Picture 1 (spheres, each protein chain N blue to C red):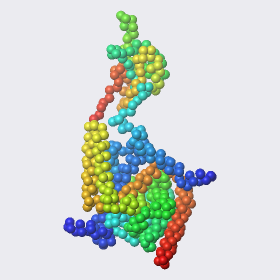
Picture 2: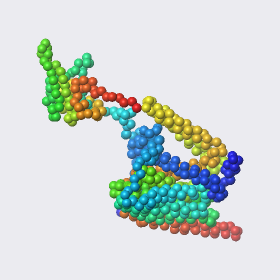
Picture 3: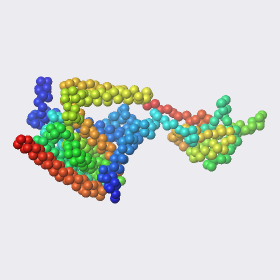
Length: 429
Length: 152
């Protein structure tokens, strides 16, 4: 049994490529668990960061520094009454949240958390992800239609229009990244793992390829993905001053929490695309500039040390907590949590563990950066009007992204031609 | 539109400035929220809260029962009761009623008092379960309102 597991860990391919059903199941469960924990953490993190940006403190009461707040919220949502509006289309009303959650989680099949840490590798990985995530619009429109109410219908139509129109600019900027994969090797790929490997071979994250071009593509994608996931400042479908809560108006309790889960999973999915396509996926920073065994070892220590630092921070805050009888539970909880994090960090310092964990760590950091940006946008920017939203999408982002595609093609072909000419000169001499 | 303005709009300078502002405010030193029952705000001495009758260093009430506060009160909510001491021929305070439910904390009684006996203190926790509790008598005015402390 242990030999089997260790033997598999040395195989160096994803379970999908190996066709190993057992490991596929385990990976699916692990990814599902990881994303769910990520959503729970994001819920807490968003409330905390938003609170601090607004000079508040955020949740403080349930658990130390409100760490258990998302769990309390989830419990509250589950025991809430599950309402179904009269005259609602029952089957569609039931199926809409399921559809949204399914599409949001489906995309994670191809997300590479590391060379071997993906459920499978598809040769059309990016296309699959964009296609599946845009199916989420169907769930949103179903939710609006089935609610038998005006506000949800208006909200879902807005949301549908918004998601479809931003998809265009988003896909155009993805095309430019896919074109960049063919630069050195001559064969492009749409596989998520292939794209990261292409960045490894070209010694360059695509965000910095052809300097302003790649960065512009990332910028367009980063704006379009906010609109795609219906987040502030593009959260028109949920504009409470106009539409109550958009397509969510008639949903309550567990069904509402499914929509919530899907929203955050969708945010993580598009952030994962952005991190894979432009920020080098699982690659650590400067894999070539700071190459060599010594730097490899140094960077592989970072995850473990990071967790140790987090644990130390928790213990520091434990020491700083007011010494009150009513806070004793929190005190012990936070100390235990800090000790757990520190143990996890120590575990990650083991050589066998750290070479496998570092890929996931760097990928998570990059996704986390985009998640932080989501929160940051939400606290900073006021909501756009619907016509402004459409104007940004069609008149601003789409032309820029088409220009980026054309520029990528022109510069790429020029570079290839120059390389060809130089090599033929070299051959003649 | 000038060129500078166009560049500003193209590179989203104003949006980035806004983002810098929100980022900066994450500094824990900026926090203004207090965790109320655990942390209590520092109240200025000039805050006009619960009325108190002040005592001198011997623990004797300063009030001379002159009734100036009752006259000054625009709501007529202060009632001062007194008897004349037959020996010293001075007024002695017997009762002092203060109907907090009608008080608007204007502080005119405080200003009218010639002996600095009545004072609107910085105590701010005045919530009560009954309306009757707002009619303060002498003991509450002299020693403050007793509050039941609830344990978790």
